[in-house]
Image 1 (cartoon, rainbow, N blue to C red):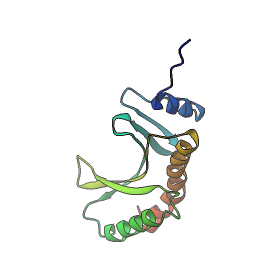
Image 2: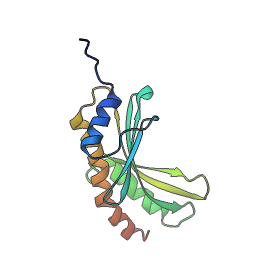
Image 3: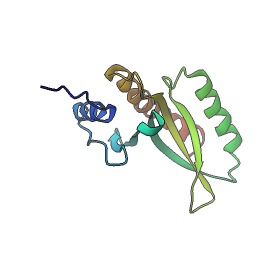
Image 4: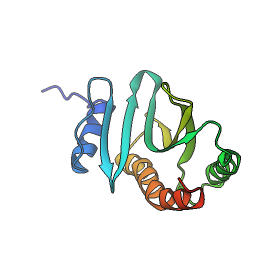
Length: 141
């Protein structure tokens, strides 16, 4: 009998199943909602990267609150105290003059175990759950 070692994607699918999340699709992506927040799991095997991402809100490019918001996001990302190792990023929306604010966790796939996977997922989930209401209130989003 030949034992076939499971691929990292197969392992992650097992862990996602335990979380009651659909498995990765053919591109290595799965998504689910955690307390109303969309969370995406990206497995980029060719790049040896696990990328967890939650889109939080859109912000107009010319909004006067941007500098204060960006400063706050950079501070949160730098200290990690409130983000449990997650970090913020922004991406220009294709069809409008606005930006999408994301909360992310990134880790190499090599050496990834269940505990570390759950830590990455949990850092995005908990940070989004805790910080999204604060940011919305603070910046009237």
